[in-house]
Amino acid sequence: MKVLILSFIFIIIILSNGLASETDKFCQSIGGDIFTSISVKDRNTNRFIGDYEVLERYPIHQTVWVGIRNPWYLYFNGKVWVRIIFPINRYEETRRGNITPDGGTAHADLYTPPDPIGGMVTVTARVYFTGVHTGECFFSDTSRYYYVDLNPPQLSINSPTDGTVVKAGTEGFQIVVNATDDVGIKDFTIKVDGVVRDTINAREDKPNLTQYLRAMVFGSGRRMITVVARDKVDRTDEKSFFVYSDDAPPTISNVWPPPAPTQDPHKESLRTRDSLITIRADVVDRGMAGVKEVRLLDEMNRVLATRNRPYEGNTYVFDYTRKPGERGIICYIQAFDKVGNMSRTNMINITFEEAPPPPPGGGVKRESIRKPIIPK
Image 1: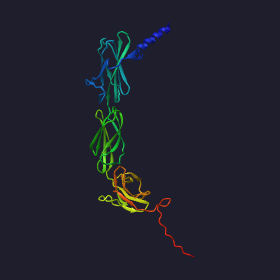
Image 2: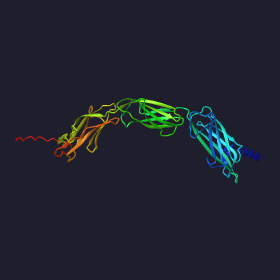
Image 3: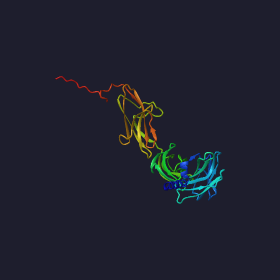
Image 4: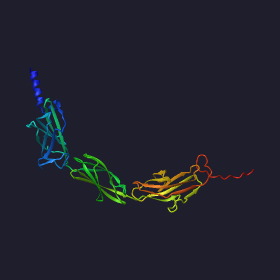
C-alpha cells in the first residue's frame, strides 16, 4: 500500500514538473509558424524588434506576443511556454493560461539578465493543443531571433608585416586581416595615405572572420595603409602599417653577346664555331625589392635556364651548349625583382658556323700542332 501511494505521488510530481516532461513523453510536434506567430516588443522604445535585427544595446524590458490560430481538429488547451535565451545561455521562462479555447494572444514579460554579452538572442514560444476527437497532446514551436552588438570590432593585420616591399600598379597586393565582433563585420575600408581607395563587403556573416583584401599603390616610395573594420551598428576599429612601394623593374646591362638593336631586331649578335657559348649580363634592381631571378629564354618564350643568384657581383652567367646540327639560337634575358617587376633584353641572335664534331666526352678540343720527325 505504501509503495502504491509513493508511486502515485511520484507520478503527480512528474506531471506537475512543468511542460518539459509533458512534451518529452506525451506530446507531438505539429510545426511552427502554421499554428502560432510570435513578435517581440521593446517596452522602453515601444517598438517591435524585427526578425534578425541588430540592436546596439539590450532592451531592458521586452514583451513577447504569441498569436494562436486553431486548426479545426485541435483546440488550444491554455498552456503557453515562452523562453528567451541570451548569448550567455541564461534564460527566463514563463507560462500563461486563461486563453479562450478559440485561440487568441498570450504575452510574456521578459527582462534582460545582468552583465549580458553581445550576440544572438533566441525567443521561443511553445503553444500546446489537444486533439478534438482523439484527446492527444500536440505542441507548436515558433522562434524569433535578434542580435545585440555591444562592442566595437577588434581588428588585426595578419600580413603583410610593417615595412614590407610591395609591387606598385593596378595588380595590387594582398592584405590578410582578422576581425572579431559580437555579431559580425559589415565591411572593410582601405585607405592609402589617408585617402579612401576601396570598401569591401565582409565575405561571411560570423563573429570571427579572416578575410583577404587587395590594396593598390602607385609610384615608388613609402605608403601608409589603413584598414577600417565596421560592424552591423557602424562601430569601427582600424589598424595601420607602412609598406614600401616599388614600381621600378631591374636594369640589365653589359650583355654578351650584345642584343640586336630595336631598329634591326635580326642583326647578328655573334658568329662562332664554338660548341659552348657563355651568355652573361649585369642585373641590378633600381627599386627596394632586390633581384629575385634572371632567366634565359628562346624566341618561343621557353625557359632555357634560370639563375637565382649572380655568378659574381651583379653578373649572371648562362652556358649554352650547341646541339648537333644546330645552325643558330635566338634568345633573350629576362629579369624579375622580388615583387614581380620585370625587364628584358632584345633578341640575341647567335649563328653557329660549321665545325668538326666535338671529341668524345664533350667540350671543344683545339687542333694540336704536330711536331716534325727528326731522323737520328
